[in-house]
Length: 228
Length: 360
Image (cartoon, rainbow over all chains, first blue to last red; front, side, top):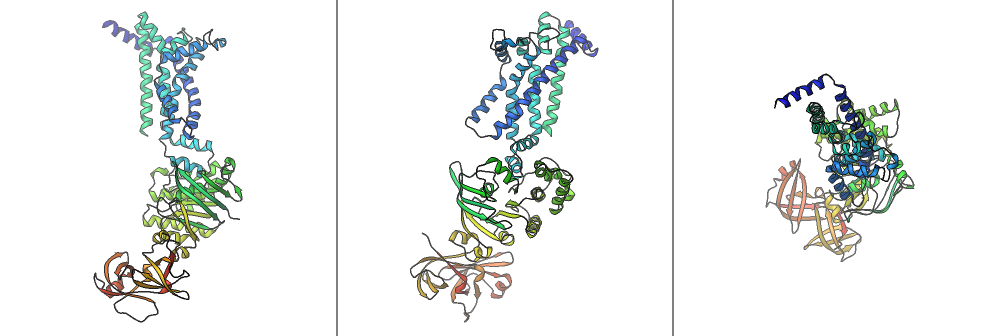
């Protein structure tokens, strides 16, 4: 018990003193997840409006599939991306396995279903008359989609934040395709996993606390948004 | 050439016809009202005319060009029109920004934008609300924002779907005032749907009656009101007395109709033996306690079956071999001392009877 207590105290000291290694790992985690969230948002927002505003066969099925993929196992995506980018794989020639780039690609695949699915349901929550009104006032398809997203802005933002939350907290994918290389692809979650198995509880605890604080901040922001 | 021409347009929802074979020409500058009960297809027709939907059948021409299917032509044509929906929704932004939307989408630049938005707000009496979030407004105010939003783009055609349904009388009067102003300016073609016959009469130059997805009759408000083309239209425009009978005699254009044994005289071209409906507006029936020798051809002795007040008037049902409804002022109801079972003479002129052919 004292060991755990001492570990916690040391962990807090590491955070308060802005320990360079802790800060570097946390910063890298934020940077990778923010990049993948931004890329996923750039893909998912237009795609969600295309799916939402068009009638086509199998639309309901497509949305069901997207929703099923909300709980895509991170290791499954990891395996898929690993096979894709490994030197024997179809695009192994790019030689980007075990780099932050491939981690971003993996996270984009992982969080896109959540962002896409939640954005579609955010758009479905907007009164259909909003789109009719916009079109009747002379909006083009693009302008109509923009005003609908604007009406659903809080729910859409919540969808994007949910995606970011999944990206920053996943471990399996980052470990498999990032390789947990110190100073290069080591993130909060992969570091915690490694340090814990090494028995270095201080560092693991410090990073764990930071991750929980990030999760807390995300939750507070989400709550604020949803209350509007 | 009419501004809007439709040829046999129809629409289906879920395989079911909601609109069928509507051919309609709307001239630039006219005020056209679609009247009919709810579910008649008025909204669907407006949505097709505003190019919000594409028809399942038929074609639509706007300003001489076929806009039935061509996407870019439809957007261009749509940008010359505006549509105020039955239940208007406002965007979650200020009243000013709501009204500015249509102009921004047309890439209108300042200061013209500001000037036109303010003008529209002024006209609709919403200027003092410009900075308010539009979501905080009442129903009548929301309706006025919707109208201001439509007016800001200075549409050539303004579509209004039940502009005063579900509004209190004060808000209704305000909206009608704004509409009367637009109509008086004469620059805008107005097509409105209403289930309120008298609103159609007040505002429109021409009326089309819709029922069950079809356009049954078109004409001036006076025509529709006095000479409805069939039984359904007659019922809708408030003809209470629709009597079924057969023409049994004719003397030049004066015919005698047998209604359940009672003989009614009327003016008609139909031949002897024709099965007809005789339509008599209740306000054309006068009631008296004694039979008098007036020029009116039709006088029936009967007894009062029922009376009930409608506003400043009293509606009276007289049993005289057939049920006959009359409307009298409250004052004359008191003078006549109308009471159930009282003996009474009901009179109407032969020219007050409108004869239509029976179809079944």
